[in-house]
Length: 358
Image 1 (cartoon, rainbow, N blue to C red):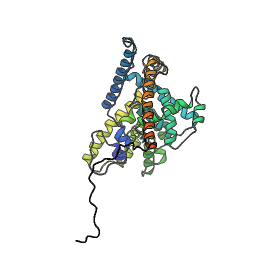
Image 2: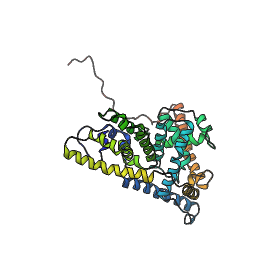
Image 3: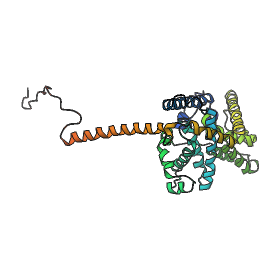
Image 4: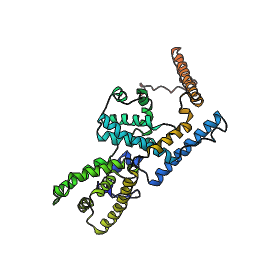
C-alpha cells in the first residue's frame, strides 16, 4: 500500500511492481486529468458529428437549431444518476461493495459512450444489476425490476452486454473504502497509539469522505490508497502522520521526496472531495435532460426514421448471413464441399518400397 500511496503518473520505480499496478484498473482505467478531459471531449465531438450527419441526411438544415450537449452537460447528468445508486442500494440493502462497484461501472461506461447515445437511467440500472453479480451478491432479475417503478426486465437485459463490452469485460474494481480499512488496521497495530487516540468516529467520518469521493473523478485519477489516505487526513492529520512515521523510508533524502509527492496528491484529492463531492443541482440536471430529448441520437430512438433505417440495414445483413448459411448447408447435404472442390492435377508422391533395404 505504501508504494501505491507514494506513486505518481510519471513514476517508474525499479524492482517489484505493486499488486495494484498489475491490475486492469491501473492499466485500463487510470487517467491524468488532462487525458480524462480529452477523452470526454473527443467522445462528445464524435457523437455530435454523427448525430448532426444523421439529422441532415433525414432533413437537410434540421441540425442548425439543435443545442447539442457539451462534455460538462453530459458529466452533470451522469453525476445525477450516480447519486441514485446509493439510494437503490439502501432500498435493496446491498453491501457497500455493490454500491461502489456500480458507480465505477457507470463512470467507466461513459468513458466509452455518450449520454446522447445511451441515457444514463437504464445504464445505471444495468450497471447496478451487473455489479450484484460480479461482487457475488446476486439478485433475481424479477425481484430487481419489480421493486423499481416503471422498469421492465428488458430495460436491464437489453443493455447488459453493451455495458459489459464497454467495460472491456474487466469487472474487478479496487476500492478506496477497502484501502481505508487497511489503513485503520495498520493504525491499530502501531505501538503507543491507544484506542483513545484513534476513536472509531475518525474512521467513520473518513469513510464518509471516501463515499463523497465517488461523486468525483478521484478514482479515475488516483490510486485507492491515495484516496483513502486523503480522506483520513481530512479528519485526523495526527493519525496520518503516525502512520507515515512507520512507513516512510529511513533515508532522509528519499523520505523528503516521497513526502513532497504525497503532500501534493493529498491536497489535490482533498480539494476534489470538498469542492466537487456534492450532489449536482437537480434543476440544472433536469434542464440538460430536457435538452437531451432534442439532441439524442435518432438511431437510438425507437420509431424514428433513422432508427427504422438502421434496423432495416441490420436485418438485411442478418438475412444475408442466414442465406449464406442455408446455401452452405444445402451444398453439404448435396455432397458438395462448401470449402471448394479438391485440387486436381497434383503429382502424387512416390510410394516407399518397404522391401528395398538398399
